[in-house]
Image (cartoon, rainbow, N blue to C red; front, top):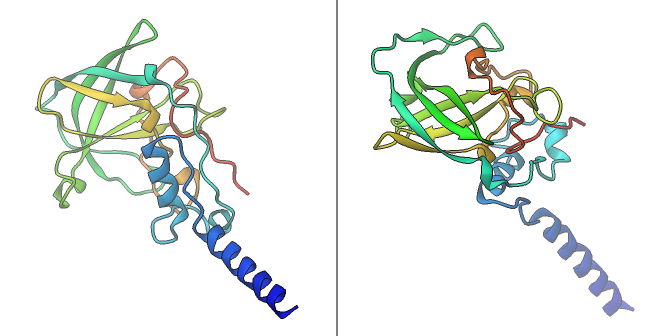
Length: 201
């Protein structure tokens, strides 16, 4: 009887440990990384009540057609401007370049930006910010648009993977201040790739 009880206790404690060390969900490395970040209390933008129940973000299925090689044209003479956000904060950005590419046999272009404070931080010197709107916003994806992180390329082309599109932190928690996607970065098609809208509990 004692032996059975000991086995039961061991089983319950093992179960508890295995639940805490569940493998991070995700089909791609990006999905696993963002899910791990959002599950971790020290890096998550989620409210505590949402994080406690968090099992993983919803993603569109990975689609290689949304990985595009874009032409990258630098715009070196742009002035620094204050980008509007969801709060009164006005971070300084500069339009760093224009990317043009084809998707589903149509041509598109987007402005790409550089945060003037972020580039002063170690490791972010070559960071570029690509915010965009598309026809999934407000339905399958977050209404305020999504972001993609990129790095300054060496040449005149850049790889854009829309499967790595993620939501602003404001999609999860209103206490964050998030850049509002400039209207000129609207794509008149459905980008069924990347992070979907968040189902709040």
